Image 1 (tube, rainbow, N blue to C red):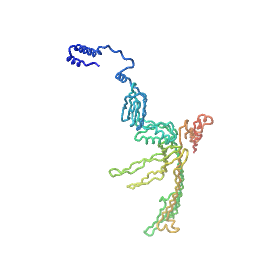
Image 2: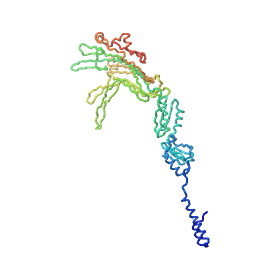
Image 3: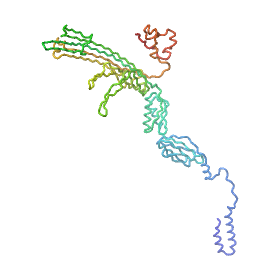
Amino acid sequence: MPIPVFDLISRACTAPPKCLALALAMCVGTVLEAAAPSASPERPPAKTGERSSATARTETAAQPVERGPAMQLVAGKSVLLPQSNALTRVSVGSPEVADVVLIHPHEVYVLGKKTGQTNLMLWRQGQPTRMHDLSVGADTVTLKSRMQEWIAGIEDLQVDALGDHLVLRGRAEDAVKAHRLAEMAQAFAGEKKVINLMRVGSAQQVMLEVKVAEVSKNLLDELSVDVNIARLSGDTALRLITRLSSSGTTGPGSTLTAARVNGRTSVGLSAEVQKNLVKVLAEPTITAIHGQEGSFLAGGRIYMPVNQSTSSGGTVVRLEEKEFGVGLRFLPTVLEDGLINLKVTPEVSELSPNGTTIRDASGMTTLLPAITTRRASTTVQLRDGETFVIGGLIKNNVTEAIKAFPVLGELPIIGALFRSTSFQNEKSELLFVVTPRLASPQSGRAALPTDGFIPPTRNELFLEGRLEGRPASGAAGDAADPGPQATGQPATAPPPIRQP
């Protein structure tokens, strides 16, 4: 170890003269030895692969970032990522979405916190930095396994997380199963939105056939006596008049009258029998898609006057629109195993020949139209092609009325001349029948009710009085019209039109 220069100088000052030369020599040697490194020649360059740590860090930072495979995480669950290269540092883009911890240079702990998107940066020793895209979403694997376990008949089911949403894809046998899948996904997702991309494989169009049949019979039997007796006694005239018939006047063809020549006495016997038979058969048919309401109306509209109060306390008459005819409304829902849920409201109505009579304040009488309606509204479940009677009515009304002159009408035998008797019986039977069918469109031309109508020529119309022309003969007619069998329709010809 060399002796410090200042120490040598201090010793030389106190040493004898013969040692002074030796001390000066040692001092010069020490100085020359200290200056020797600065004057030494340059060292040879380092060998390949021998770099300082600073140079290595600079060159590593200058290299591009390497993109790794995307990673899917489940919110609330963690994973361990083993690494072949040692890591020096880790970082995550959004700490609110995911958290990362470097447990070991060769192992990274990643935790998904909430649904969202972020990225993960891994600084590797001696290798480029790697970046992974992280997607944190719901546990779609567990949800998919539960759906496949609890709901059968689902093909190619896929459950994906898209941001804050869940996406369902696949093919269901019917709409009910697709709806159940959406409900399960919504219950699993909570406040998240579910995008339902499920496809339904079975036919989802329902054709409803409705039959409304009614037979109504009315019987009216009436017998009445009208008496007109006039007598004179001096200056006094006595007259007895009874008009007990339902109309109040004697009608021709229904009254037998006996009167004396002087016209002072007349007796009229009125008798009437009415029999009415009404048959109503309506068969509306309509097709609607699953879950959508279908409506049908073949009839018309009338306007009924309705009194309404005004803000000033007065009354105004407004016209209210009323529909009549053959109508049908129904809402089909196709359930599993071919079961069809129907909410159906059939209706048959027409204008009644007997209107409603009202009298205003001035005494004027107005006859308003009346509508006779048959309507049923219910919800039933049937299978394809089944028929169900959803409503029926059997009505038997008996009305008896007696009009009599007081006291005289109560006398035996002779009292029949002073009273009127009427008997009315109304019988009605009504049925509503529905038949749902799963329908699908078919190619070809459909048979129309007008296919069998041929316009008559002028000779057939004016000379023969025909309202329908004669059909074309034989082969020409067959060649022009291929018939319903060629178009896939049932071989049923339209009913012929009766000749007058």
